[in-house]
Image 1 (tube, rainbow, N blue to C red):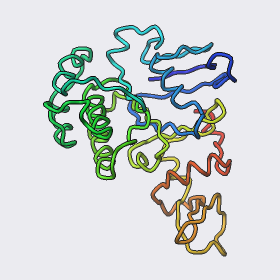
Image 2: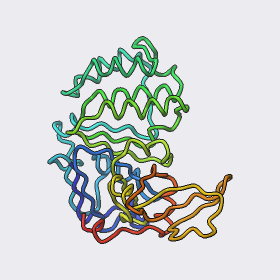
Image 3: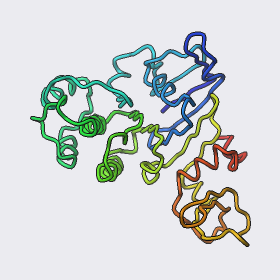
Length: 279
């Protein structure tokens, strides 16, 4: 569980990136953390992981202050950063060195995921492509069974089949005692696996809701013409007409267009309801 209260942070003398920021995320969720470039998503992930110390405010992750780097905290958190370096050793060598740090590591789960990703323990990590390296880190993270998994742009470098496989292994590998926090610009890559969306902008949370609630509130449709279409909340032109969001009529349910939803939120067409803000 993550509880952030009145957090403030800035880099050196730069403008305050977060000021009086608060957020609570419960276990048993896969959360999509979204925002424009420069919104502070990666910084927030690093603060949660204990890699950056906030200027002020309180943050509790699974009962620990992350920046104190308690060993019991570190053994139950794994972060896949957007940018990473890989040692010039084999997968087997990496596993021998790193598995002992994670008390809940599941070797069988790792073997299954490596097989699905077509990776072998004899593979040299530094000779793998960027996408293959990313798949290995995803496999290791999921197999660690850590209470908190943080993934920053996890699908960067993955081809289309690998992105599909990523979604499959995440859904099948995460249990109800874990919290998975995924930050990405590729919102379509995670739209079928997250069950909560959090959008940050200008140092604050501008939208937060369960995916089930989004599906209940809104209809996502594509139409050749919007003439005569009532109650359009947000619209975008597409090669085949218009992508639109309308209020739900309670009789129908559509697949969520996560990219369209995000754009609607950023353009202030969809705002948190009072019940959203009270969460």
